[in-house]
Image (cartoon, rainbow, N blue to C red; front, side, top):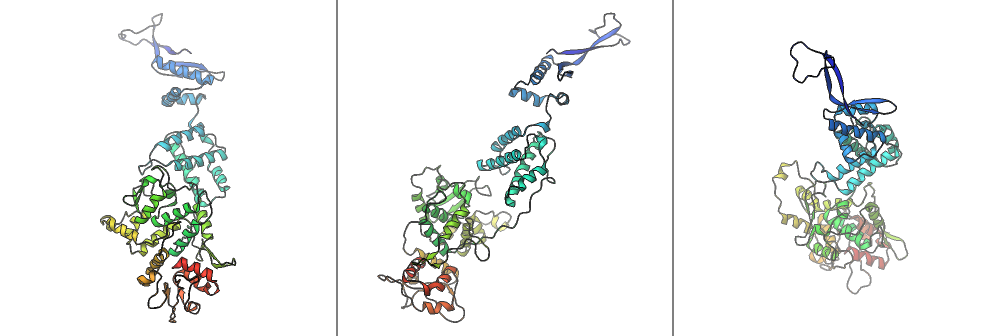
Length: 525
């Protein structure tokens, strides 16, 4: 396709003509040429002439590109870059003719591809790259909306269609709002990067739902944690994990307060067995800063044996990253009931949801961890540091330095839970001792080991109801096949236990067989 310049004439002005001025053949007028080259072409049975550049070579390049577009030939990357960078006057003229598409006619698959490239390579405002899981979730939801709402071009997007689709998903408000936020971020990115002029789902058009208050959770008592660990250790394979792996998973969660996602992603290399700490990289915790979690020294040694043979880049736990931990712990809590030989229930299982409506899902283990920290006497600042919570906004916290040895001391004061699958002497006694301390009950060294003092059996943490009676737990003597009780049936009726598990045991004790009583004593003492 040839290019040319438009020629025209004008009258000869008075005075001397500039050197090199061309005249018509009769010499009566000045012969002139346009500065811009003209690109002529036929499109849709019509002849069009587009003003190109002052340079002939550049105008010829535009002519070749127009020919490609008319012939519907595949455009190279250079051709696309050329279109993006061409002068707006030329682009607008080609759009008016119909050779180029407007921004609103851009295909959504191509925009999603551009969005994906930016999402996976750029950094968030907190300075870290987005995780693969986050990118996959955002892109999946954006593409799902486009597909189910039949959006093929930017001009097709309508807030009403998105609301209709999301309304039929039967999801909780939190998930609904997640879809809205992610699609809005996609549309906002398109507009911010000049792929479009107007956002079709701006705030007033696509609204979020009001989220209900989050369900309350509760902290498990030390004895409940001990029962959960023991029962889970002997439980069958479920949720792609053995009972032992699940029990260790619960134990580390309740002793470190690490959240579900971070614990599932925990690598062997994140654990420092020299300093007995777990170091969560800055890109993982909520505050996007490096956080240390302290381990009991004995627990660090046991955990080292647990991961023996694994590389530093391998995950500590075999559980799937998609494990539904709330359902998993609920299944394990269901099996914590103590059953008599005849099949009847002596002590009910630990309730997943108590009478106050508080649930004991996996995140409740973090509640348990923070509650236990408070019971050790740790200050609010120490609790925040050990739980990995932010201490910003408080001048005292900012200018106060906490000695790491103090934090280590607090961790060592927490209950000594038995490592799953390992029988340790006096483990339950130590847990009972911790529970007693929280209720102001002093136990002697002999009581802690299960021995009697002055011929009297050891006592459990109780609250006297004012009637002056004592409630005595049974004592197991070496060589005896069944526990001996002293005044238990008579006294328990008049007392209220601080520990809910012990209260249930006390109420059921007169009806229990000797074998079941022996099992309970083994668990408690």
